[in-house]
Image (cartoon, helix red, strand yellow):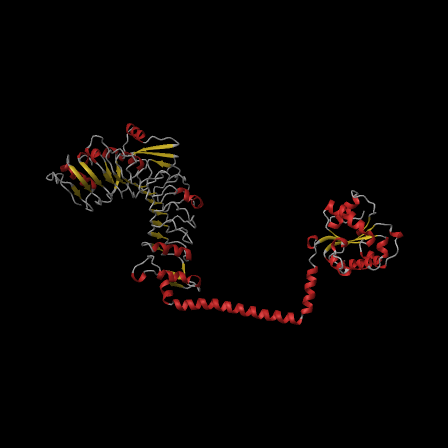
Length: 622
């Protein structure tokens, strides 16, 4: 163990830098050697890495009695096995140390107890610009006390007033850098508002791996903050306004942030909405399976985006707004390939400036479906992982499940291309051959069984029941010439005008000189129902009316059994016999036979029932 005489530096009145680093000497011995430098102005005292016997060291007022009388700007006590520093050792309002200190580094030690209280003591240094308290190896939350009196604790309450809803923090006026990574235990933004005083010069804040269980607060007062590191915390639930008041932020690290994935996918754009100056964003190792591709639509100055260590299966980021992007880290994800539009977006950026894409440790495919991606890796101007022989070479899996690499596939690209295209061509040719054979079979069957096919087609058409809208008219009216006045005047007034029934009347529809027999056949085929007005004149006309009855009988089919409606306008018993009508009545259901007298007034319910029967809405006889 090296020792230093107490007056070893007495002969150096103008010494500005004292550096004793990585020496086999205990920190108390090194502090004792400061005796000869008292009441001097020194820029740096660096005792980082001095080794001890391995036992934890406690720094008290006795050890720092000489250091307190030195006007030193920077003190570095990192990695010196310090376990505890009493309040009297670091804070004496009348000491030169408190009045002059600008930078203090106590990182990589083993501080126990409430480190938050220790941090509060350091914040009372008026000229302090930098605090580095990161990487404390012992995560103890026991109450070490720090030797604080009640009056001293009251001083802290005055500097850090808080209630259940808000917290106010007063920082040193010149503070620009604070690194408390791993130094705080279970410290969180549980307040709705955190107001910062003297935060207008703070540029870097590192609170990573502080076991923060809550991130509900909205910090206000960081008007110049450029770098914020909140990685390694447990902010499962985050206030969507947490970054609203740090518009100057350029570097944000949220690696291993443990944020709720569903919440982040839905609200990421809101979290980053006001960070328009952001240049670097680290979202690595958050177990994201997918994210909103437009979550960074307002970050048009973004240069570096780290999405490594997630479970993304696609690039998941819209690159169109990010014309300045220089680095995209997608390593350690679940990417099988990059889609064509993703590759095109990267090539567009690479055409204007250097762009680096990291893809290592992804389960890439070298299959037929993405051979173009393998070729892109070797032709793109985007800079990829690796150097020398390993550049642009990634492990991948082929169609057969074999593990290969993109370099080997690219060296045999023509072979793989022919194999893949050959499979596709074989499939297309086989399909075309089968279609040709099927066409030949169909032609052969149709030529040999044309009559049977036509019959089957007609049977299938019969299975489709005709409906009223399939016909041009609702009813064709068959009547004798002597009854034209009733048919052409009374029926339209009672059925067409009052009920909207579309009637087909031969005296109204047929052109002079036309062939009546052909017209009757055509009119019956064009009508939904056939309405026969049976009178004495109708029964005596064996040619015209008899032909009409025969065609009406022919129109009755299995699909339209109720097509014919017979309306007796006189007593059937007094009518002369008509053979064709008798045959028709044997085919027409009794419900299709009605009795309506010529003198029935237009408002009689009989016309209503007849109209409903023609339209198919009624099926009962009066």
